Length: 468
Image 1: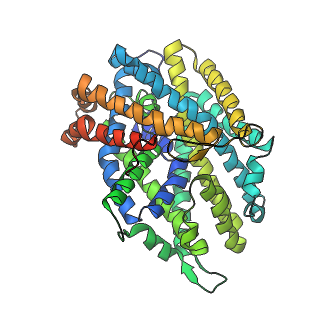
Image 2: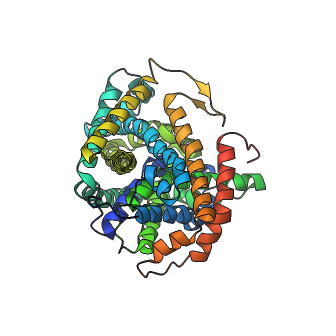
Image 3: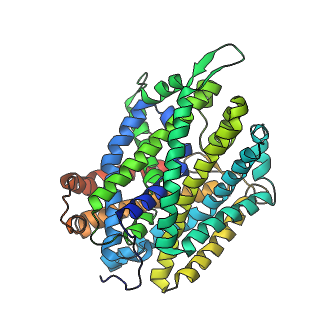
């Protein structure tokens, strides 16, 4: 499997780690991790998440990065390079980012809207009931802001691996980390007395976040938390989206994969934890435990603007910094999602980067417009197999995240665990002479534990497993 002569590569391990961490640190960390932590007993969720990150997440992350570096191919073609009959898995892996990018850019446009609102001192209006609904159901504005976000992402991709992805990651990621740390520290210092005279502060919310709440915990409840933590890892580590295969294909052969993967794990886990520190203490302080029940868009675009408004004059500043941080996180993730598709088009159809990026931009823009119309002219409501009510964006999210991603991950475990055998990945990791410290764990996970957990996750996602 020779490396193609014109294939770009990251200039060093720092560029790869920052780009991969940027992909991992996205909206899933910011609006899903805190909600699940609050819902699932705080510290219990954190402990299970950490254990899974070091075992389950590590296994899949190592596998995908190693597949990318060994084959020097994108997700669409990499699986076929390993075993010709398994090329179908590459098609599924490429479909995931192709489905995700349009609606991710729509959400990116929502972030731009709120960033501009707080930048112009209009945070009080953003906190009003109906503001978010009125915006997303509008005919034109959501599309324009989606295009703005899409243009920024496409521009970075047009510039290539070194001048685009790597260069932007080296600028954005340090700023992102500083904003996350700064807002998290601020969140711990706030205090508020509500209209009924009840005083709450950030440290109380922090303790709710980190101390395990085991009251009334049953075996069924424990497994529910376990499945939630495992599902979150897909969002947090960009697993089974083809992204890490694409980025792995740009890693130099002399890079220390073990060290790089450890750094990605640490960065992602720290940011995910700090996302909870940013959000849970602030929401608890101003809205009590009831406010912590929100998740997804309602947490970020409805609950948090109300929190910023309750902060008084500081609210606009904090809100602006928060949505700036969210925008940076969304951009780095969207760039990685788009690159997974663009690299696939380049490898499979031998297109130039410019042509492949233009094709994917057109597909994403058309898809994004359809998603925007799903909140007005094309609106409908259906119930998904997992019981959730959905329209176009939710359906796309369900197909990509709940169905295709577990299937791709299961297929990867079978291919590497039993067809090629784990030795293929172990040899790739160790070829620079670095020690694969969790080798035995890796073999057990990829062959037995990871596929079993993934089957449970898939069955629950499609509504066939209701006991958890």
